[in-house]
Length: 70
Image (spheres, rainbow, N blue to C red):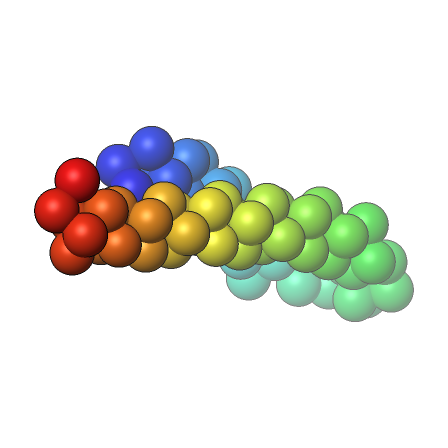
């Protein structure tokens, strides 16, 4: 879980940077072409979700082993 947590920080930081950028540069040009930014953000979020799902699976496996006594 710590590995997934460490991987989340850069993704969340990049997301925060993108949001801040869009807030400060919201103009006609930015409104006309947010598609590229959205694609990058979506890829980052998809990767974050995959990492979180892996962490959940690892946690569930650990709990099963713990309950089974091994």
